[in-house]
Image (tube, rainbow, N blue to C red; front, side):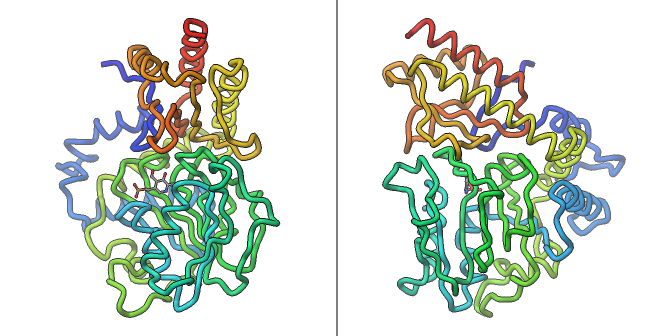
Length: 365
Ligand SMILES: Cc1ncc(COP(=O)(O)O)c(C=O)c1O
């Protein structure tokens, strides 16, 4: 068996150690006599798995006690609707649109909010092709908004907003961190709600993380389906109904693996090194490769790039595949290539990619 170098945007590479541990424990989880997939979610074994996953996450992100950490379903896409349904409470909300994902969140919120104008676009960089962040003068905030929504890492456009750049606005900040959560430390207390689909930096698809401040619980209308109500989910410890047990188990293994790597400060250093290596390869290619994003907001996790001659795209992907480099095709809306450098993608993997890119440029430039 030879595992390839996997740069998929998601579902994405998982740490090999985690996959091996899951494999070892697959048939008989620690003497339970069955796999995690086959045990009751209400039994003490699974309760221990869920508790360990939650405490691992809390430790990694240093989540204050005033926040609940929920393991839900429906993906980040469900959160696009669930957030306004829970938090609007008859008010409006502001959205900053910096790429395809915050735009989807904005449109879905407008759809479920019904009332015209209750979901406001506070700023958008669409006219610049989502290659930069809005400057302060472009952002028009409503001081009475129920919340302000941002996507702190745009997986398709490769634009990242670091927490240091975010100033307090007086309204709860809601952030889609699907594609860079756990890639570096985050001051959770700056946010009212953080959410993320798991299949990039957390674990397998099927579980969705919601970290919510207790003050934002209990605001949903009584007509909201119970399963969508954060307060009910929190009261039930994410166990209102059967949770995605295997995905939570693997996420827990990933959290343990991250702790063994030195936690998020260590991951931040590794991720910075990987991203610097790849951006340098792009910027120093004499125009053979290019990335259009402003240098100060380039994502460390998702690096879109194009070849100057798009007729070479197919050959690039074909030869990359032969070299065991997977998942490099760019999203259809932006074209070109994209390399996702999540936590489980090693420095060695990025070295192999950069070498391949240099070699391909030499042969075709
Ligand atoms: C930033 C971001 N938000 C939301 C989503 C949608 O996530 P899901 O497929 O889990 O609904 C994605 C998926 O790639 C994403 O990258």
